[in-house]
Amino acid sequence: MTETAPHEPVIEFTNVQKVFPGHHALRDLSFGIGRGELVSVVGVTGCGKSTTFNLILGLFPPTEGSVRVEGHDPHAEFDWFRRRMAVVFQDARLLPWRTALQNVRTGMKFAGIPKQEWDGRARDWLSRLGLAGREDAYPHQLSGGQRQRVSLARAFAVDPEIILCDESFSALDEITARTLRKEFVELVRAGGKTGVVITHSLDEALTLGERILVLRPPGHLADEVRVPAGSDPEVLAELRERLITAMNPEGAE
Ligand SMILES: Nc1ncnc2c1ncn2[C@@H]1O[C@H](COP(=O)(O)OP(=O)(O)OP(=O)(O)O)[C@@H](O)[C@H]1O
Image (cartoon, rainbow, N blue to C red; front, side, top):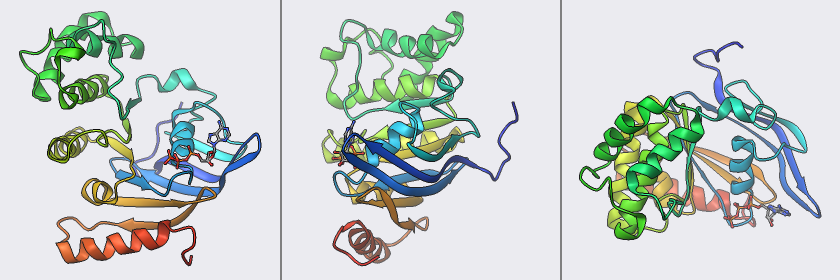
């Protein structure tokens, strides 16, 4: 197997169509995400964000066109991706009968990481996410923000090349979400990971992503917006307006 060349996109959609019975969810969607990029995907409800996310995860194949992750087909080679991609969902999706430590260990078990590494890595990542001393707490003994920290620890502990977030910060209060987003960005950058964040929040997209992909129904790319590092509020406000125009199904292309 050949490794992806440094500048080749890590995630690449080429003319992707996805048709569900009675519904055309994605229509001719093409984009690329390079190694080490942190990209947000926004769009109105039903524009195809989750379908795009699930195609990257390999949960189903495209109807037409090609989806490649690290040069591989994520649907046909599902097992190859077990350690290479990790997902953080909106709800932490922890096993309620397992402690924080056991939940992080379980993620490594499914990723096929050698058992002797589970404990050390789980403790290390829980500590990095501010949960040292809470390793033995059960999910119901943790706040929503802490549960999401366990979920992030579970994702990073696998040391994946790609981290996918599906509305991961949406269910948290704004202060907690802001702190976690900042930590998430630092961890992605420090680890040289490629991050893809699906979000309804334009402010979140503008905070997180150096690039924002805007989808518009029926599932095509309406715009691609770069967010220059350290943009001042005036620039961010302009970009926000551009995103709204691009997202609007009634708006001009
Ligand atoms: N399994 C399915 N069967 C039929 N139609 C589907 C299926 N999954 C998605 N769709 C349709 O495809 C379109 C895109 O759905 P998708 O869930 O990708 O949108 P979304 O942008 O994630 O929406 P939301 O922001 O509400 O989560 C929608 O119109 C949806 O009804």
